[in-house]
Length: 194
Ligand code: GLN
Image (cartoon, rainbow, N blue to C red; front, top):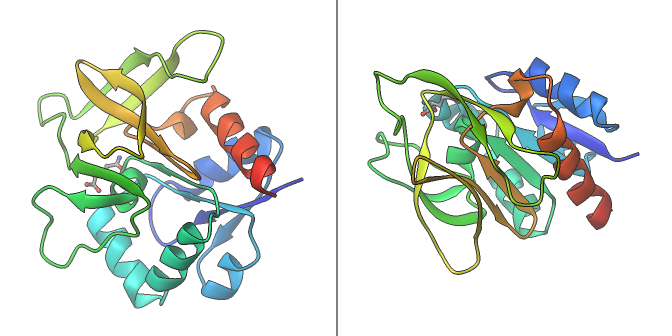
């Protein structure tokens, strides 16, 4: 059984732990480099990406995270987590560093104020059994991807899910729904590497 961590500096950690457990992984929170070293894969949750990024630097996690992602550890980021996995943020607030891992440019809060929160059915390549329920909360979208990144879902003409080798990212929050197919896909990615 793969051991999958959830980066527990800020955000909806508990919901991811539950979703991973129901997708047959051993899930545990990760706050320190020693804990990161013990997991086979990692989820970066939704929350607030500026805060999460600052806390990652403060807790000495930024470099260890970059190293593990480079070394091929599977990582899945939702919403703020997607932002942390982008090589580049459009108009980052000063000091917002990212872990990187996907050759993409993201726009924060892209879906705008009037639609701060909405749900939509999203067809995801590689997920069978119909569209997933996409929960979008002040969600980013992906402006553009590089050659190595594969777009696996769009909504309203905008890219909302991307995969590049060991790294997966969605603008939306499957952990807030009862549908754990995205987590199951990620657990499979971890099994394939392990
Ligand atoms: N808007 C948030 C950010 O920029 C992300 C929101 C979320 O994770 N639900 O970090």
